[in-house]
Image (cartoon, rainbow, N blue to C red; front, side, top):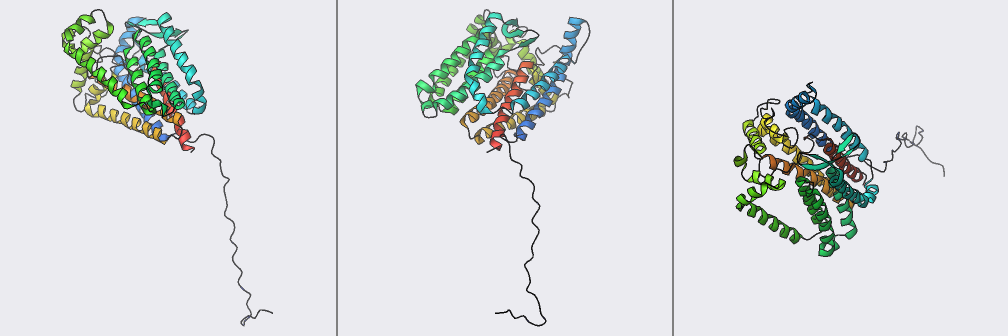
Length: 408
């Protein structure tokens, strides 16, 4: 039947056909996602501040050393060298951040064997300096294997906790004995150098990874009780410690920590000058570049005791701001660990983040005489090529894990 239309005649309205929206080609995400920008920015900010403070703290000693050795003053020597190391470290950071952690995990066991070989090599052919044998010389390159040992222990422990599993990590046979054996072997080799600071760091990081992996808490409580008993014993037998300090490098450090004033012209000199620097800084500091203790009063002002110069020049406020930057970096690292879906990545990020946290805590504790002097450097601040490059490469591993998080 034909359709009937009202007059005047009209055609039925046709639905409006809209042009199809212009679409962009979908870009497929690669195997790895974007690295964690906040963690990267915090690292680079600390590195930049560290270079500035290194220039300030090392200016006087670099002037003195170069005039004494060559007759020509080069006050920028330490800063220039550290800046080159920083550039190499940043390059290592970005290269390492592209390494898949599943590929890196395959080398965890060879890494621990290589670390063992390096420590044995130090004892056999290492270079001696400042009363210790800690360096290996390979042609024009001199480096400290202890920095690589820290990374090797973290990678190996992260892998082993995955292989054993959280359930079996709760047993003494698998959750304590193999880890304690490795830590014991490395501790003996490090103390033979002697390298007390690295020994403490490896023991602390190893314990954190064991606990995060599933080892029962009461084993750590027992170890803490033993350590406290030793500390209180040393505190109560200062005369015996001082007597032992005459023939022992480590006891000399402990004796100076217990009573630095009694050795103000000997082992206590560095501690006293550090406390002078911190105290003279006051609330706002003497101003950038205006430190007095860096003029050959405070030994290792550009290295282990750079935080004392920070306190002197930037004051309490500046020191607290730097510590807050470290705190935010560390918290961000642990947050990334919680986001990891892979157990190995999570354990590895926990290990390297804890390594930064422990070194910051111990360094600040030493320069304030809360802890005995052990030669612990401040990450991203203290002078040292091997330490800086390895630290930035370890940050690259954390960023590699963040890429995998972003790709989930």
